[in-house]
Length: 376
Image 1 (cartoon, rainbow, N blue to C red):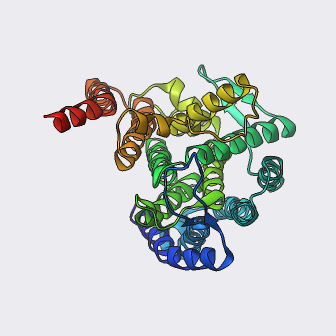
Image 2 (spheres, rainbow, N blue to C red):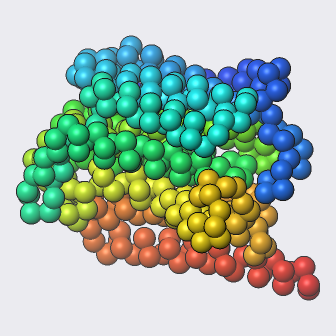
């Protein structure tokens, strides 16, 4: 665990320091977010925060290769797969940089996302099997695994991109989700008494660190936006980390993951469902946006000002409070799913129920209390 903490801190420190460099590059190249009708910021903000986060991920990867436990306890495939994911991340980050500079059309960006997903598949980072409740193994052929991997990666990338509408929102949601995924990976290896060194754990803890290092520059009022270079990067790394987990655990490992008394069926399906659970808030936002726009006869890629974070602002939350509320929902779903799958008992259930009531209360009661205070 100590070496994972080191990886987290390295990613955080390097990302934090590189944001200054990324901001200067953005200002010099004109990669600046202009103020549009659907935006909530009222002055131009530089893009290219994704370059800083990519630097943090690369630094964390290079340091991890030199740490005693990770360098000796991890098989070579752990660092190989992590390197492939970071390479695909660099590719999609480059597409995002071009979009931040020249505003690429939606189909061109989709082509870049397909290219990055294809890069993962070409180097063996894809789904290979599912272990379903009851112990039955559902194997995938190469084409099925590639299609499912591409769908998960591209859906996650676009979900993160859609939720990146308030200062600190996307980085916080993904950072929280990455920490929950790291907890799942680490506890799964602990319960099964296997090596703690896995690609998924390494990638998610580094991703959480990169998001944490970027957030101080991105919290309202933001001095730097991650842009598409950042939102697509962190979406790809999070989803690809989930994909690597099924390639490094066999069906016996996954079926024994409920050894602490949790729900065995959830443990079996979590490598597939957890990215969806972590990003349930932005994915819901994505689905609602597509339905809303197509029903209105518009393109599903056409921008508007009716995302979930816009609605939180409408009911009376400030920008910072709206971001905090969405962080709470992301943490509730992500950590709640992990805890219920790995552990059981009244304490776990009571904790999840209490956290749910607390989050619901803050979401809907805070604006009313604030208005009542102002009226008083």
